[in-house]
Length: 167
Image (cartoon, rainbow, N blue to C red):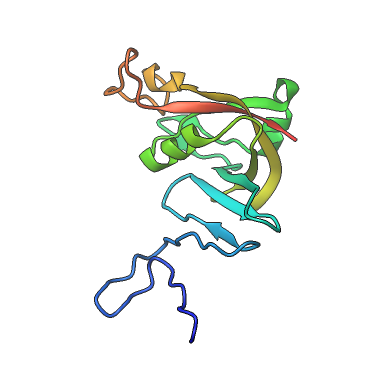
């Protein structure tokens, strides 16, 4: 009897319209699955030889070239991270709900790829690890900050950030 084929979410079936940009996880060991969304964070899970251990890797996008947002340069690249004390920084300014949820789902000591986006040579520039659980992003409350969100309340903040360091 032939084995049924797996179909990726987003593959149009006879009655269904495809959902571009999304992939479903597969169950085969050794395969890499990625959840691709229009967000600044993406989670990639890769399984080893057995299904027992599942490692998580995060893709964290940043722009290494100057770009003004509300008159403030929001540039931040791998070189800027290297210049930070103990090569550690907070990952602030995330203002996409899906990306915020991914950020909150990150666990301590998990790995993250530092991805240069929107530049001449986009790609992975380094490897980081999560060193602090999610906590409120202070920039949402600062009126002069380009990431200010007037609808966010200090007693119930909408936005979170994480602290990361280079491996």
